[in-house]
Each structure stands twice: as C-alpha cells, then as structure tokens.
Length: 172
Image 1 (cartoon, rainbow, N blue to C red):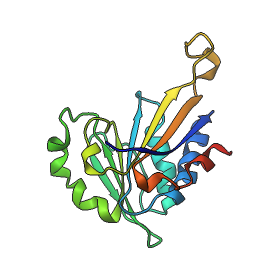
Image 2 (cartoon, rainbow, N blue to C red; image 1 turned 90 degrees about the vertical axis):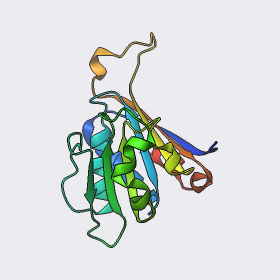
Image 3 (cartoon, rainbow, N blue to C red; image 1 turned 45 degrees about the vertical axis):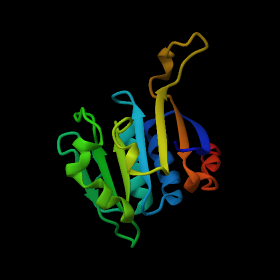
C-alpha cells in the first residue's frame, strides 16, 4: 500500500487555467513518473495533459488518444518522453494494458494514463493521482454559472512525492 507523500488542491476556472496547471506541474515530473488522471468525460484530463506536454517540451500536439489507446511524444529538449494513454475503452486491469508495454516505457518516460484508476496502479508504488471534479455549490450541486470551474486534487503516493513540491501548485 502506497503512502501519501503530498497533496495539493487547486480551483481551475477555465480550460486555459487547466492547461497552465499542467505546465506548472511538468517541472515536478521526471523519468519514471506515473500520473493517473481521473474525472468525468469533459473534465479536462486531456487539457491538463496538453499543458504537461508543453511544460515537458515534447513533440506533437497532445490530443485525446481514445481511439489509438496510447501516443508517445518524444522530448524536444532532452527530457523524458510523454506517453499519453487513454484507458477508457479498456475494461480489464494491468493484464489488458500489458500489450502497451507501459512497464518498459515507464523508466525513461513520464506516463500519463487517463481513466487509469484500478487498472495501472501496479506499475509503480510511486505515482501521482490527479482527480478533476466539477466545482459544487454549498448544496452539493454543480453551480450553473460555473460550467468550466473544476476542483483538482493532486496527490502524490509513495516516497518519491514526499518532498516533490506539490503544495506549490496551490499558489497561482
């Protein structure tokens, strides 16, 4: 069982801010990092990953890999590649993901898995869990005027994230 290393809570008010959050998170990432993104359809998982790609300086437009399952974006700046996976259509756990060879890619890449919860945690005891949810009003119902507002919780699991600087993400 992985222990929580650090946590950050960020309110994001637009897709541009979600992308900026990804750019701010990117410098904290290094080769071997596994990032799991959780959130409903349209929550901003791919937008966050686009910002990660910009921050990591990778080649190619970061778009949803829903129909190809995984895309590799090599670094243009000598850093780690970004492996972007969409596990939405994959019902099984790690066995079904095995054909993607994520365990081979992980040591030299940053692997970001959308819809990966319950499917790829076994790849690393050190991982970053990013949960994106709609902002709720005091009555627990999404606010009508807050369609783009998201509450993002970034949790570092495992010793790698103990002092990785996640709380700095809250200062925007």
